[in-house]
Length: 162
Image (cartoon, rainbow, N blue to C red; front, side):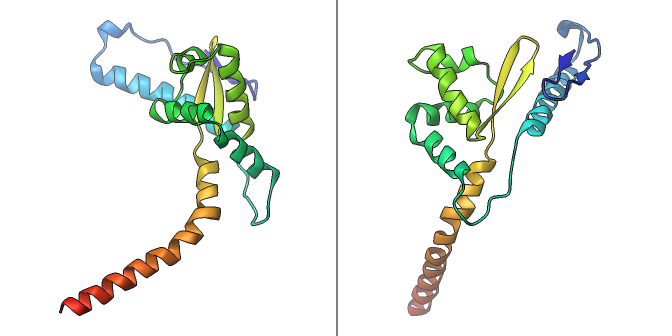
């Protein structure tokens, strides 16, 4: 049984055969199902909002979270292997559990990390949506003119080679 912390609902996982008595395909389906359940719960818990063109306090939290190299390393770890516990994340950083926890709190406040409780463990998941929002708002609009200029230059060079 995996309790959903935020809604109070229980998600019951049916009794399963021992791993040695099931096929590789069944093991994969079981693992995939558990990951999908955790991802579904994490997605439900995310507070994703539509951002307006004006400045918002969420932007400050996001840029503050991204400003620290240790937090960026944590995001890289979660991007590589989503759903890690605090202990697993601590293995790759030269700092105390409390220090890693504080960095994770900043990342959660910026909506870059979502957590799901699975029994006694708390799994951490990377949420790329705020980064996509920043890309669309701050980077993509500056990228279009450069791409148009490159396309124009390419056409010009191709004409001169003919």
